[in-house]
Amino acid sequence: GAGVSQSPSNKVTEKGKDVELRCDPISGHTALYWYRQRLGQGLEFLIYFQGNSAPDKSGLPSDRFSAERTGESVSTLTIQRTQQEDSAVYLCASSPTGDEKLFFGSGTQLSVL
Amino acid sequence: GENVEQHPSTLSVQEGDSAVIKCTYSDSASNYFPWYKQELGKRPQLIIDIRSNVGEKKDQRIAVTLNKTAKHFSLHITETQPEDSAVYFCAAEGFYGNKLVFGAGTILRVKS
Image (cartoon, rainbow over all chains, first blue to last red; front, top):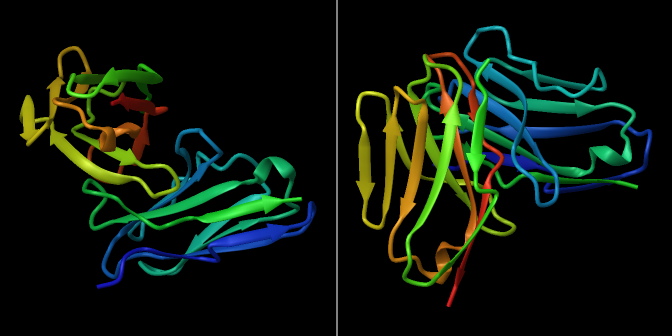
């Protein structure tokens, strides 16, 4: 079936605007991650959803960032009042149970002008 | 929580030589250790993984070794080729339900 799908693939926004990024994980995958990757940098953990458990939000950099997941399906990452330092690729990944291979989406390139 | 350190940050080798990347982790309960390869402009992809019940795993030119006592694991690439050039990330995960934590990455350059 289809892999992890992210939309939009590119997003250009003005400083101060809100943005919403979407991730469609592979059907049946209980684990879902959001990572941020700045140019030439590593994978910065943002948030982790595992089944019906409370999400691990320990990586969210500020209260401008929030994420939701509907059951074991779609997740949205929302960034309010965007800043230039939010510019990065936002990667979503899902896994069947949480301790197995991660399948990454192709990411959303966010540019804040 | 888990902390993963990765060394070196950059590694240059001559084509045909071996490359070794090392990672240490802090949580002794961690039991799953994958390695991901990210080519320029592409998404990370799993290349090999190991669980704590084995000490070594090999897949063609790639091998991973795990030392649970010392809490470190390493990626070994033999007979390197230019297409091995990429960023490599190690990661560690604790028992079920704990998140996967990545190292900072190693830029591998294979010179032909």
